[in-house]
Length: 351
Image (cartoon, rainbow, N blue to C red; front, side):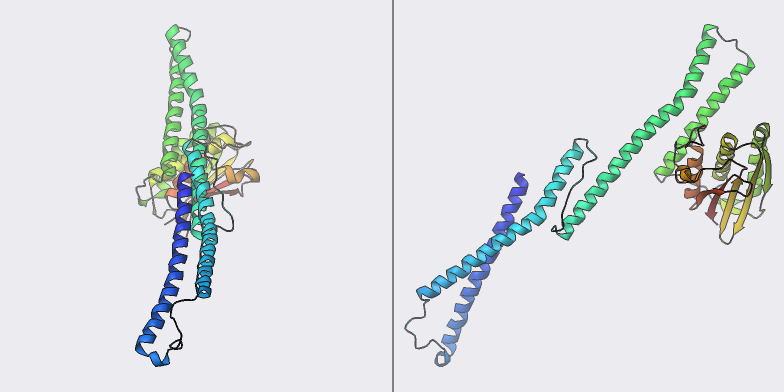
């Protein structure tokens, strides 16, 4: 408040000084003009026959009244200007103090009388505070979600290892395979978290090269098809053999995430992988036969940890990984209905 009060007083003093200087300049300038006229052309000077060139008391009174009116107008203008500047500035200053104390929900206020630059400052501050608030909410959400996702596999690993240590479980290949599965799941979760985090920070680097996409997809299918067949799915491919410019490792990772999503959430039936090339754009499409994604969930399905009612299993990161890879390629991924009766995920990028 002290700084604001000092600024208000400085504005008033400046306006008063400006008004007084203008008044004095007008009066003294007039006298200088008439004095010069009298010196250069006394015969034509209108007051040459007057007894005195000094102002009369009435003139002195008029000049004083004019000066007082100018000063009053300057004070009123200064107060209005100070209010237009200081009210939003005080709001920003108070909001900054609240933000410094940890309250990210506070917002500065302004009104229609505020100057344009000051109003822009208030809007920019509110936009910054909104972004900080959103980032803090996302940080808290991510911390809770990551802790939740890590808790289950770590608990399973700890319980089984403790059982091995205490002799409750017999060390046999089946148990070790189970432990290895939990470790692999942890590894995938950590890698997905790292990839999504890199994408959020704009640091997901790609290694572009001309790629035989059909060969890459065939390699993924060969590795993943047994688990799909075991779950009751029938996989088919419709591929384009032309070379594509992309990061093959990331595209394989995205395809694995899409197939993992099918295995977890689709009903057993036909699954089709297709590559379609349009002018200057490549499409990698994975389709299943149902049950599909409710329309209300489509806008949130690619958000990390947002599984929705129809996506209750898995880490909730797979589709976020697919979207991150698509965006890193300068493309996008969309979810829509499939001709097989289920869902089609279309990952596309410019070539």
